[in-house]
Amino acid sequence: MHSIEELAGQHFDAVIVGGGINGTGLARDLALRAHSANHPLRILLLEKTFWGAGTSGKNSHLIHGGLRYLKYFDFGLVREALRERATLLKMAPDTVRPLRFELTAEGPLDRIFYGVGIALYDLLAGKNRIGKSTYFGGRLAYWDAASDSAALVIDNMRDARHYGAVCIPGRGVRRMTADSVELDNGIRVKAGCVIDARGPWIGGDQMRLVRGSHIVLPKLFEGNHALAHFHTDGRVIFFIPWGELEPVTLIGTTDIDHGGTPDKVDISWSETEYLRAIAELLFPHSSELPLIGTFSSLRPLLTAAGKSASSTSREHQIGFRPDGVLEITGGKYTTYRSMAEEAGDLVVRKIAPDDGLDQVHPTRSTPFAVPTKRPKTIAERIEWAKREEECPSLEAFLTCSTNWAWQKRWTTESLAPIAAAFGGGIEEFLERHSPCD
Ligand SMILES: Cc1cc2nc3c(=O)[nH]c(=O)nc-3n(C[C@H](O)[C@H](O)[C@H](O)COP(=O)(O)OP(=O)(O)OC[C@H]3O[C@@H](n4cnc5c(N)ncnc54)[C@H](O)[C@@H]3O)c2cc1C
Image 1: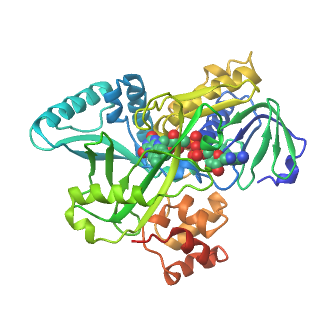
Image 2: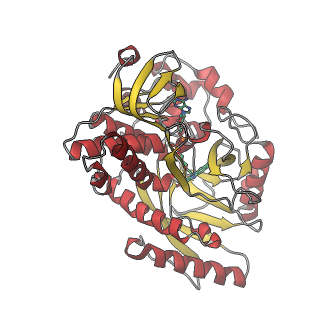
Image 3: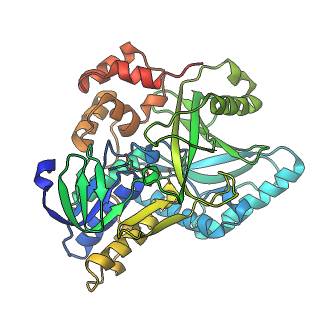
């Protein structure tokens, strides 16, 4: 572990700003690439709060091709995501697992429409199909995958560190140029290549910030499968089995333009009502159930004039900006590994153009070197978070190291043993995370 003061004036081959899935994925790509080619590279990854604190830790936790993008004829995006789904199932079996989806469709015409969609989805998956789908007759059903998305961010960081990258949380960057970054405490670090992976914090005219919110209710239906509900307004709402501490159902998402800062992203009253109304439509008894938790995050989408938030492209953008900084943004969590590979090629072509490193792509087939299976008991899990992740606080533990913040109704008493391990923080946590019915 390096102290921040040690970094002053040092030179790194690549400095990555932002510890979401895109930043940590790229750090792992470069570190593993350098290790595989026996070509030392100095890599620095900086995150202003904690690993996975942005969108990457607060999404729908799906590793999926995106059945609904077929509606927009985004076949390339769907095919790439299905290929990445297969790679992640193989490379990260402790954090990514297959999940069966049943699909609700209203009338016979919808059933035919979505039946054809599922058949096409399987066709695009080819040899990467996971399980047996049902296209016609009976319940429409298909297979995708789910992840513990904050854990996979942290595993990428831990693996990058294992292969020699310097990874520092709790330290923001306030200025970046093509060959240096200035930290928020004034320290400057020199770099062969600077990469901006700040997700929604990148901002700029090209970026449209769209908020997606989830609600969590007690488990609504029997079985371990998820539901994909294609709503009459054209949105798809997922009902996902969730909860390590007690069984709950995760329901989301909404898709609405976000006017404020990326530092404060909360569900609105109307989003809660919208999601609860759809839950009630499918499960009338849910109106009696308490709201356990809610969380929201932002999609940085590339602007497309006249398009709705749902239909704006999820394609990624990777390239050098006029200021010489490499930007990696947009896309989907599911395709982070291939995005990191594409960005990694651009980095090594800049910093070591004659060394052939852009032909070295080990993340396609190298499983994580660090152990990724989390312990089960709360005490062991706290110990793991402190040792493996340098988890600094109760808030970081419950929202990043785990997703427990939203999976249980917490009280001062139930938080006490966990808070003791992190030096307190109960009041602030309850103020921020208590849902009101
Ligand atoms: C509601 C919702 C649900 C989604 N569900 C899915 C899904 O199920 N499956 C899927 O494939 N995709 C999903 N996505 C998309 C996916 O989650 C995102 O594409 C992905 O997480 C973006 O990752 P990122 O690393 O670019 O950004 P982030 O995860 O937001 O990371 C950016 C990081 O940069 C840090 N940072 C910001 N400013 C600074 C600074 N000045 N210095 C240092 N660090 C800084 C932040 O703290 C943050 O940790 C969803 C998106 C949303 C909004």
